[in-house]
Image (cartoon, rainbow, N blue to C red; front, side, top):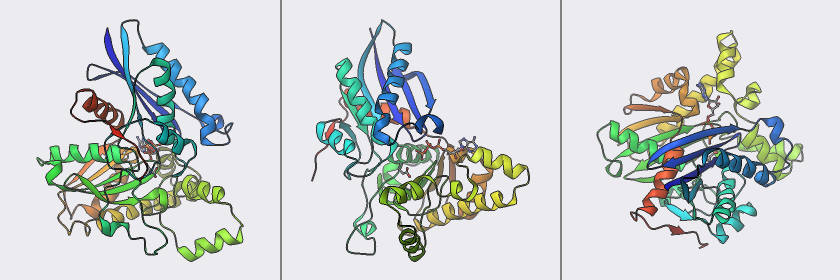
Length: 358
Ligand SMILES: Nc1ncnc2c1ncn2[C@@H]1O[C@H](COP(=O)(O)OP(=O)(O)OP(=O)(O)O)[C@@H](O)[C@H]1O
Ligand SMILES: CCCC(=O)O
């Protein structure tokens, strides 16, 4: 029998799946969910059965009779702020996700799908370094009003994997280094990694930092308040506007940078300036985090889907490369990072953590 592990990574427009066997990825698939298909579901949780059936059909296609599923590991969602690590999926976690207690994000589906399949196959289910991993230093928590704090929401899994890669490439140890990582996908998060901890995070989901293909980033406060009041907007409308229909989508009606770049090639000057503004804002946010580590920056990392664009990364690089070496790693290593987190528990290098409320 061959031990195989299922990895599930749900995103807003895709579900990434992989089957790992003996340390190697045996099968990997990205199932795209076109807007026309997702439009049939009123909210994210309505997509559970649809996405579950896609994962089941992946398993049916890929599992052979010699295979023995030994566990399921998924990308973790918006939960209570917790330290990094591998967490067993439990009832408290599932209840928070089903109630969207800490917000709605496609990755909330990870633990829910993993749990359903784990019950079917009678195997354990885990999440690793969810987007709410909180290693903020106390000063980073101040929002500016006593009523609420800043929180750490970001692409923790990929940021940590790429920060480690950069340290390896720069001949340094992650635990001894200070690295600033910009994960640039549909959303953008930028972390200050200091001696193995993400001590500050530019949190685009909560309206900080640069605008992104889908999100607004930071906005002028009074104009925002006035717009919301004038248009009598509900909380759901505000979220869907600022999280899903802002940034490139607002300025250009398109979230796919590849299509935007085709338009730029065809002479669209406005699109060229909007993309330059996005690179300008990313650079400005990255450099702002240098203050967090008192200028002692060993490396700067550009990663995520947008980092496939050489024009985009060059535009950022020319504004930041005076600060530290710039490492560019297009795409993400989330599937491998999830599997590694699972294996650390299986091999006894780490104990699975339990998700509890404070
Ligand atoms: N080869 C490429 N050239 C330019 N842009 C690209 C390329 N490949 C992907 N992108 C862009 O990257 C963005 C999506 O990145 P990514 O796939 O990391 O996002 P996601 O997984 O949907 O969201 P997130 O990373 O925020 O979780 C899109 O704007 C897409 O057009
Ligand atoms: C991964 C959380 C951050 C975002 O999607 O903007």
